[in-house]
Image (cartoon, rainbow, N blue to C red; front, side):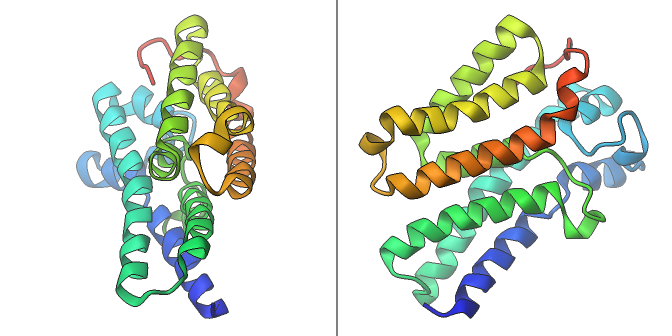
Length: 208
């Protein structure tokens, strides 16, 4: 496998992840830059507080789709030109997933000021490990229900992925070691983006 092919796939994933959905929607439809209001973040929490829960939910769906379709686009490129062998492609999809998330958090199109990566991650995990994604979503929902703290629920939901892989990963994926590495890296990324927000008051008018 050529290094150029690896770099090409990672670059495409990063550029797709860099599409700044919340910034584009706020500028095109509302004439504002969401980063200049509220907390100054391009997060769904800030969108919810400034533009309302309906816009926030639309953006959540778009970001899930960005993660899901981002990997699908890369799979189509692979299918068209047979860039990788089967085993390598599964590992590369995890690398692509991380690149998608990094692109969302640090978008090149928006001065590297993006969102926190949760919903893009959901779309990616739906592709890589559907059963694990359902488990993580249920854990996050339960955490939100009992704590009413959205950011804390996101962190606990992301922590559920490596826990799931430790106890059930061998029965749900052939690429156990790679998924373990991916799940721990994903948790680190999402914890880092939410660590500061864990001290913010619980979100009262929105849900996961």
